Image 1 (tube, each protein chain N blue to C red):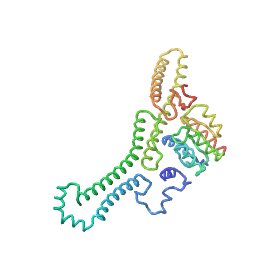
Image 2 (image 1 turned 90 degrees about the vertical axis):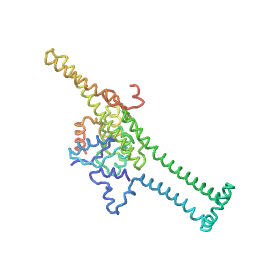
Image 3 (image 1 turned 60 degrees about the horizontal axis):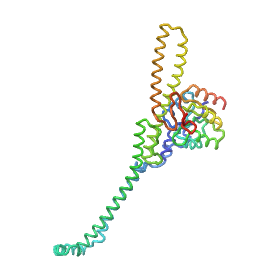
Image 4 (image 1 turned 30 degrees about the horizontal axis):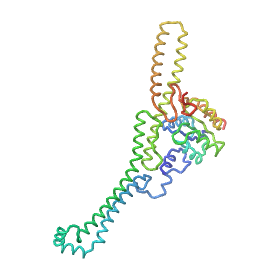
Length: 121
Length: 246
């Protein structure tokens, strides 16, 4: 049984890619948000099983949005998908309580991570 | 409302009530009353101007009564000649002054309304145009104003989304080129360890071509300015106090 996923990315092109990958694996797209503030709003309304979160966004960034979501729901499962390669963001994401931190240019790791989350939920 | 429509229309499941479902029970609204508040504002401004013009006309209708009009007509020639002899006196002069005053007030009102409206409309449009110029010049570290719910806000959002997509594609290209460049460098090291043969030389030439192409791609991406991040030639780094100068 697939998961209900909220996809958060300010780039429509990237959202499309992530959605296509998730749908191929049999997951349902609960919603799409193009900024951190939209993500917080939509998380409250949709309560998805998983959130894929970009970090660099023009309105509210992914780290701030994740903090807000996790402060309201500590059980929220947030997977950071970013193009940033730095370790310190990975550490920051882990400290926040995110379930993972992956590079967008590596679709296979993302697929594996989501599969793992599906098995362990 | 506009943003809600966008959010809801993107959901697969209908966990939120979609705009189309929600509006199906209501009678259809005239297009002018749908979310496009700029249209409404334009309508209000032009109705206001039309009302002002009607009020000016009403002023004449109410204050210039029939008796006075008859007086003007009957004594018109006499009064006009008297006016010619003593300019600035008599009924026609009073009437002219009254007319000039009303016209001046009306013109001032019209000018003020049009000036304020144009300033309010053209200010954000200028900002959006400037953002577009910056983006076309390769500076993606800009944002168009998008905090209003009218067409200008919508246009700003579209410009920002174009910039975000452009940035994502470029950084994706740069990162992928960086990863491939690292792989090609490892291949080059392995090749350098091989005994020189015709095949190895040919392979080395091909690796050089790929390396040069990847370097060109990386250089191209490095030339852009990105929102909150920069491309260091191999990977994407986020701007911040600790990264500056590194």
